[in-house]
Image (cartoon, rainbow, N blue to C red; front, side, top):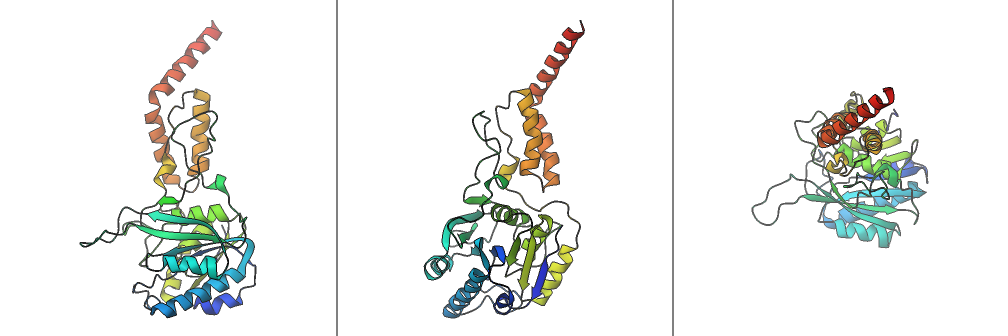
Length: 311
């Protein structure tokens, strides 16, 4: 477990103190400028001031990023197009993906369509950033011997539920991100011992995830109350991350060979559920239900073969 470093202050004041080329990954969830209450006026700027703020902090982010480093920026609908232009056209970063985070619950509307997603822009400093596909694969629907049973690419549409108020990890921060969502980003674009920066630490999800994934993490948070919240959260016992892409529990069909089936059952938990102990037991139970008949038949065949050998 790696203990993060947390700075209290405005990221525009703290970022210049970080050495150039010292960060492997940046996970940024800045204010969307929608008027939310974060205990300051950071989410209620006029448009021009907000865009200037955006250019300033991203310029500093680019400076501290290593050559093979990446930046993921969360953004709402109002400024996502402008953010893209700042990242690609103004600052010359390399576009790698436009990720849609879909969630099933959100604000209800009576006029127009209720929002059910956030966007995440994924850029890098060079055309060949760190990307660990094997660390973020999802289980496939069917077993085929020529398929890669390590799993498939998760794609750019991600489903993670919000952190509900009844969950143990829920804090008072209004825009807390699910740990499983940040887990995927950190695993994909950094390695053990790398340094991850979160310039808008908020509820501390990035720091909490890096603490458990053996990454060094630097967090910056302007609100002292949220700093206290983060410090308290980092001291809590770890019982698994609070969210998971539902596809990670998917059990492939057609695991008909007993040896392959048992090998896969063990591998699945190590590959897809390593940081989710509660879901490991659920997976085992569902696996046994799904393949109960085949597993009983395999056991009978083994007993019959064993009996023949004795005779």
